[in-house]
Length: 395
Figure 1 (cartoon, one colour):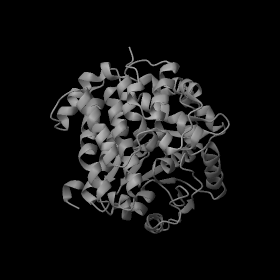
Figure 2 (spheres, rainbow, N blue to C red):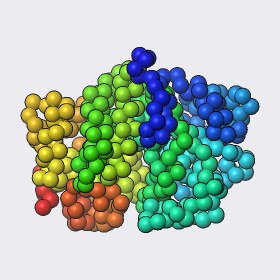
Figure 3 (cartoon, rainbow, N blue to C red):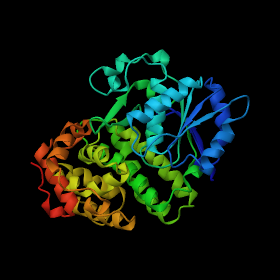
């Protein structure tokens, strides 16, 4: 890889970026005092070559890593409890969170819970709940992303499904931010096209919703705008040519940029995707990708100026909302993203429930316009049927 695609960064945490840098894992474990780290990953990666590579890279200099792979695609509280129990039973002293957003979120939550006496849900991101955490009981985390999607490797929270209430909850503490990220784009080369598309659009939408969120945050806006530009340019290349290391590297950077930017806020896309993921166990990035144009139309009037700025950044011929909407629809088609929720197996009988859940989701507060439960239900129905004209522009 070209030298300019390799580097050590210190924002928003320490990041070592570049192809092949997973080989440095043992050194970084040692620097953080890990002798028996627990590598947390998801069920689908447990037997993969990249997990074996990571375990071999860690198992030097007296370090003896263990593997926990009991993490679902939408991680649950039970997954975190199981990982925490395994961590304690084996006397582990740190976590390597390895994989896509699900594994990263679960790994960070296991590290949080390693030394706590309260239940996981006591740390839900509401009010000052984070102050309940016994910080001395938190384990150090090295995050190793294998997809360019959620950017959870540079986040201070985990999204975990509570199966009892069928809701996704955000578990937060400032020190959940990993101590180190190994961002090795070579680990993403084997990601199949459909997951490249879904995770890549998730990264794009993080920047998109952050850019459109209300409030004054020029730093987040700048990061989001560049994150969107990189995704717009390199995601089609990564999708069509999975072995394009340059495209994979830029997408990995775009993913982290989106996660850094959305401290400003997310919006209606995530507010709807979270309950849909909790209720129907669908891929988060895919849900976001299907929902995006419908939420865009609802927010049309208030994001018009933002769309002019974005259209200039990606050199669209026209600089307006309609040009960006057309580009989004074209991008989704290029990446094989379905146009409706019905096409991915979401039933249509719970619109009011979904609307109410979306309104209660923390992401709803970052939508450019306040939406009601009824408006969220309307957007859901339109997205389910695939009818953009059924979305009313919010007033």
